[in-house]
Image (cartoon, rainbow, N blue to C red):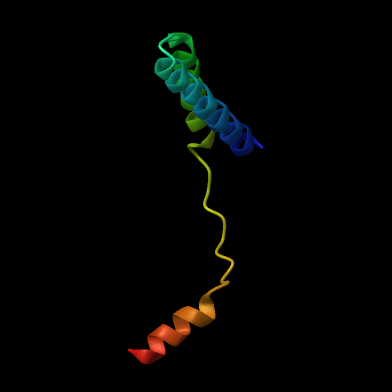
Length: 71
């Protein structure tokens, strides 16, 4: 469950940093969006740091086998 929460924080942090960039373009710089975004990114990466990779689904196994036969 923690990896999903971490992904949520990363997405919210990205949105916040994008709001900062938009505020910079609009010449009304709001640094609080940048700092909140960086905080959410760090929390998100903290939650996702120990995520194990999911097992391979072997969807393209036939493609890899075909390529190996050609060599």
